[in-house]
Length: 210
Image (cartoon, rainbow, N blue to C red):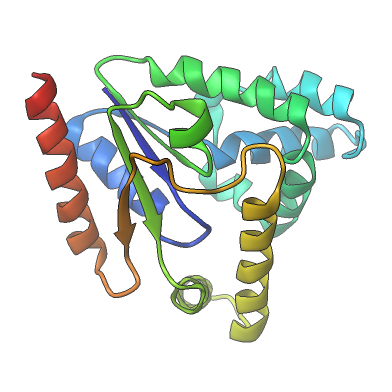
């Protein structure tokens, strides 16, 4: 059983994916962390971020079992990841690793930008999680403040819009819903409501495939 969850930044897909994986006892992979892990490895080794061959070689060494969200969430790693994520050979290397992960038993939940369209196009359950840019920026702002940091809502909002343009406009694996994906707009939904909606979609698929 493969559950593919896609969507733009701060739409809530990561929180939802982890909750779903826990509910069903499935393995979870935040595919965005694979790009961040590659970028961190390059930064740690003092290697350039604009050499595609070097970045691809590093991508092929990423340990999917050793992805630390806390460490990899740092801003500078995210910026570096955005530079290597547009490289076709890096994407191919990481997609291979992500596909390998998707076949783990008893099932997997993968979240990212291109799971339902590129990584696992045959996944029996595809959910595209979205929310307005304003809501997503506010969530990110509140998250930073709650963690004791300082945040500028306007700057975060502009960053969210830039990331959307970059993700949706790239030539290789642009962010878009798969044709057979269930759309889940969380703009006015609590995480619990989003989870219950997703659970009903998954349960229906499980009963069909039983």
